[in-house]
Image (cartoon, rainbow, N blue to C red; front, top):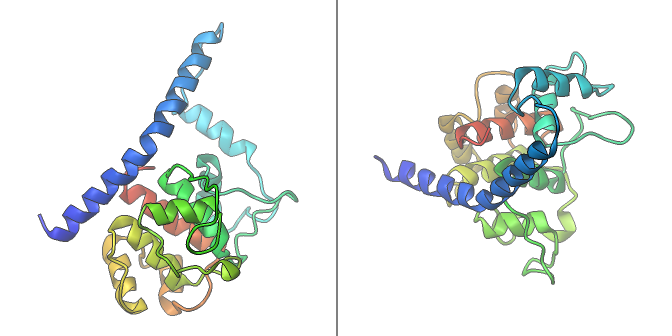
Length: 221
């Protein structure tokens, strides 16, 4: 087994261990609730229940969109959410702040509630959690630029780091090749868009596609 695969497996174990306490707590709550009910309910993995959840979620600007199904799936799984006006804004530029929150949810990393600002001058729990997991590095997202649009190169760097620690060093083109080799970029609409201009900003729909691929690669889907 190659060294890169060994590092990838180690990182996957690290992420799954970090999430184990949350998963255990959810199971305990679920079992406690189930035992307290007088009737037998469908399991959470039931196709009928999944279809029901899918039907309950509706955004006025998603129907017919090329990423409609992944967006609904992402909302159901808790990776992302829509806006109060009933829209999802799939073609809107995703900010660095939004993406870091989505990434933490995707990897199921427990949030670190900082009592004081960290070395980067922020008390944002999502940034803190990604730093502690070794996915985000000091200086990547200065606090005064956290609400800027996320570049596709930055998105690739973060998801490659999530797969393999310290792998996302180098030029953007090198990181893109690593993302393609891992299956994060494919020859489809999103892959072509992300490959065409790595310095361009990513959309919310593009972010969803990449995060779902990352989740599947780590076995967290």
